[in-house]
Image (cartoon, rainbow, N blue to C red):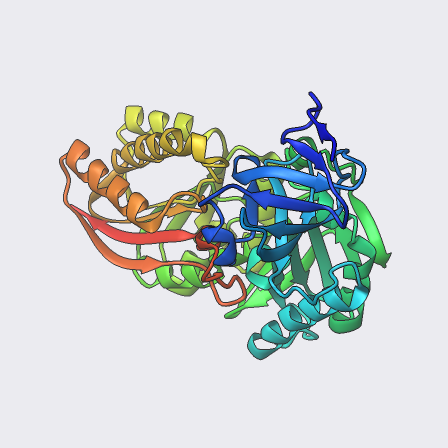
Length: 419
């Protein structure tokens, strides 16, 4: 056997007969036996390959323990922080075959068929939720017959044709449109061009509806896949506390929380703040669509700057809603993210009337529920105000949580009353 120590390789590579294999370090295999799907480079003792060379992105890797016991099959990407994503813990599976991926997509679609009429006009839901559906690196949203696909894994992207075929077979979309999350091309070295993959292009906007509320969605250029479907039920829950309230809806995007509060909860008014002019244009159109344009106003601004200006003006609101973008993308950035949440929440309380309702959110999967609540406790102590938590909320059933991947329990929504 010839050992290779290539300066271009993130791990030690050793030449060995048989299919490529990744040997997990001694006493590091338990999470993977436990079906956690992410293998980082630090967990790998060595790679075994027939030619002693680094496998290419998308190569199927047999993951084995230090004792050479089979753990799982995964896909390799040397460019990614997640160097191997795991997809099957059955040694007999062949994850190169279309039938394997077809089965995963079929299972995901069948779950959503229990929850929604997928063929209905105005239906909006998450059809595939990455790790929770056994498809780490793939997210698919359904908007009124159109599918929005996001790949966050270069390795899985190599199997896109199998996945697209399965989506067509089981979901029967009018079209499939590709969107790439900001920064993902660089993180994964994913060379993907956004645009139409199958069928017909979606209109701009198309429309979804839930609980008598309609929203236009720009799936081609809007943030993420065009709409934040995960907050659908939380917007309705928050609106129950907001009757007659004058609301500040910070990071409002296309107006989901504020419009729902006015139409469904009879709030007196909503002021939406977002730094995206196109998002606010869509939000204004959504307010008009729902007959609440007179009660909804919009400001294009950085939220921290807007909060500082309201504080200077001594302008107070009956309710403040904070739904910021993800702050923690890596474990190394967790402390910085918690500090950011703390500063933002403290600033929000400075423009909230005593006795007001405070809805604060985090979509950072690396921030645990306990850490988020502890942050709120820190804010109460630093602000000198009593915060009473009324409800803990999370993501809906079309964004299921994998019991073996805690990071999929990402959405935290806490409804509070603040003295």
